[in-house]
Image 1 (cartoon, protein in one colour):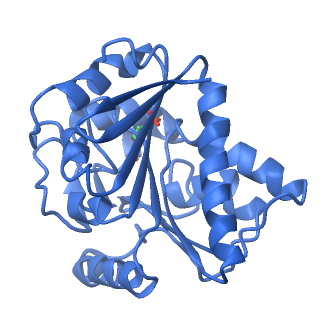
Image 2 (cartoon, protein in one colour; image 1 turned 135 degrees about the vertical axis):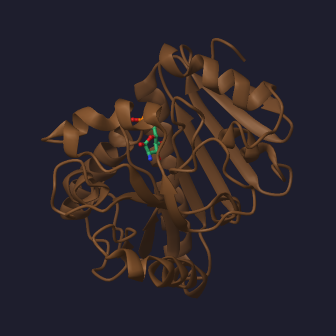
Amino acid sequence: MPRTLEIEGLELRIFPARNDAELAAADRLADLAGERARRGLSCVLGLATGKTPIGIYRELVRRHRARDFSFGNVETFNLDEYWPIDLKARGSFHRFMHEHLFDHVDIPRGKRHVPNGSVPAAEIPKQCRDYEDAISRAGGIDLQLLGIGRNGHIGFNEPGSDAASRTRLVELTEETVNDNRADFDDPSKMPTHALTMGIATILEARELLVLAFGAQKAGIVRDSLRGPISPRLPASFLRIGAKDRKVTVFLDEAAAAGV
Ligand code: GLP
């Protein structure tokens, strides 16, 4: 059983081990999609990449294969993608999503959205507007899954991001480039920019499920939850309006060490 704690309307669940948190997160996603399917409704999930959600996707794939769970009513929107990037390149979030989830489950084609990092510069503003429009047309995001970058970024909203920001092109910080370099075949060719949902886009989701695991996240988790709410630490924005929506933070004991 996890320990629970409340901070300014955010509910923290601190699990003995990472795997327990991953199973509980998979439960939440599956419960929400199942409950909406029973009412004949679609379920719109905001998805994240990075190491943090991999275990959740693994568990959802396992359940789908065990015929325990269908994604037939699910529509997904990913947070971000590098730019410019070949969508099939190792390191692209498009490829990540196919490898870890899309290729193994039954989310209908046309209902899986990842910002298109292969468009030329001139098409970026339209692409970003279209992404926001597609989210609105789907009825908004029911549940957004989120990890936290080591510098406190959410999606690719790096320190300095505005609380009112929407889907846009951003420049990555040196720290983020260094953290993610190893995901690329040729690390020297790692993109220095990305397309990301904005802070305001993320905060419009009706429910946020934030995850962080391991001792290397303890400092940033503490500062995001206990420090000042500031653009210097985009994850601290998760506390804005947290009383008005459901915001749950799943941690393992190592990541919770500072809270
Ligand atoms: C990535 C993504 C974020 C993610 C974060 C943490 O690059 N853009 O959405 O939450 O950085 O990554 P990880 O889960 O690997 O620690």
